[in-house]
Amino acid sequence: MVALVGGCLRVKPVETPAPSPVGEIDESTTRQALENEVPIGDEFSVKFETSKGDFIVEVHPAWAPRGAARFRELVEAGFYNENRFFRVVPGFMVQFGLNGDPGVQSKWRNSDFPDDPVAKSNTPGMVTFATAGPNSRTTQIFINYGNNAFLDEQGFSPFGVVTSGMDVVKAINSEYGERPDQSLIQTRGNAYLNSGFPKLDFVKTATLIPSEPATTEPAPTSEQQTPPSETKTTPAPISKPEQPTTPPETIEEIKN
Image (cartoon, rainbow, N blue to C red; front, side):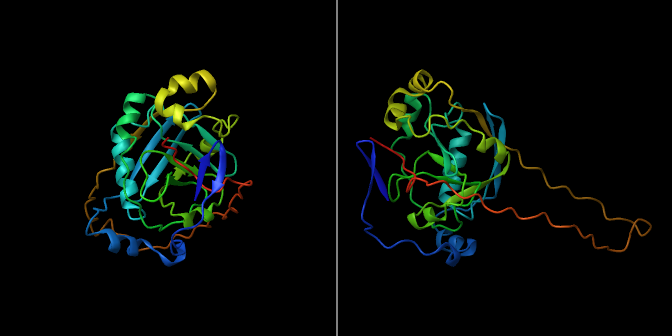
């Protein structure tokens, strides 16, 4: 874990054992560990309309039920609307989740919720909450650009994945890097960002995609019935994960 001190990154000594490797935790383990205290809902998708284009996040509560529940709560509250992508590191990740209205942001600032076990790895396209330490997640999330498996051992648990529009996510303006000050975003909101970083890309709206109702088709008559057939398709080639470019050591949520 790292802390931001005087604008520099300082590595803290590890005080507790690292979580189990991702390969030893699966969705059934996560479900069994949490089913008595955290309801695990159905999968759902969220459409982000941004200044760069649209992308869709598919959320899997079985991966991280607490994270999925908080994300849905924030989306339904309209929290992510007009959020700026204030931290963009090519090859590593893009981070957002500070509301542009300081009044709204202050209501969520200390809404920490408990960590989830890490059930999936931080590979390209995975969506994960940022954190300021154990059990300190609130509203900030990031989307992995590279294969950031080193974040798994630090307790960063993905709750969703970009299923459409990853090209849009990768095209988000990165010219300001990590320069925007999270503390000033907290207190001054988009007024601060618009003044000092006017070219930041931003979320226009984030909305739940309505689930399609199940349809029951009538059984075919004897005249309509056809023998079963097997359709074979050629699988799509598996692309090699994009490697990060000397990434920072972790992803922080600053609460100063």
